[in-house]
Length: 252
Image (cartoon, rainbow, N blue to C red):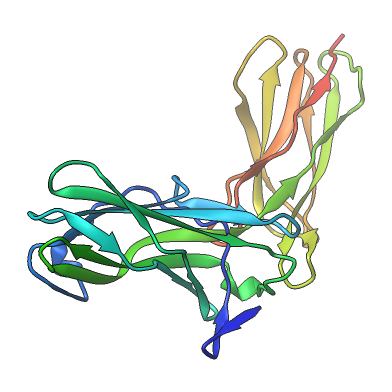
């Protein structure tokens, strides 16, 4: 894990949905400057795997009667002493009083030495400066999930199968281990078995089962029509959601 100023450093592809932050939550400031929206990669959930670098984009929208001048680097903080600084933000004018300041940081899991303890809820700290020298400094201006990437497989058998016969679906749920840079079984998690008719475009849930302690999955269902079977994991604060690729079964 990278070390800066004696603090353990970690970062990843972090995501934060747009949110409104009341001025009363500000940790410091002067004048009428407010932060109105924070967005990191757009959806409040970002996962990081074990091999590919990720570029994290952070956008903070702020308002002041005089307009926004600039912003300091955004700090991203999380569990396990997780910490990362973005590059210097670039501010784009939205209107006379409002601007959106955007910055990014690139992280490589192969060289930045992450701990699995760093997964979970992270925060964005921001400092925004207005044209009239007003400013706002806000810790925890927004929150997001920094998640370990997950993988999920599904195999339905036999293929083909007669209508009304039993189909057995097996698979495995694994997730990134940032310390070993490998994927390992994610056990005892609830996973949905889903089915999509060959002519349809959406899946429906047939049942919910639990993975064993090693992340292995096995269940049965009745063959009704040609279609695809898959497992689906909803994810949680530390691990990303994932769907297995559907396995087509021909029903005769």
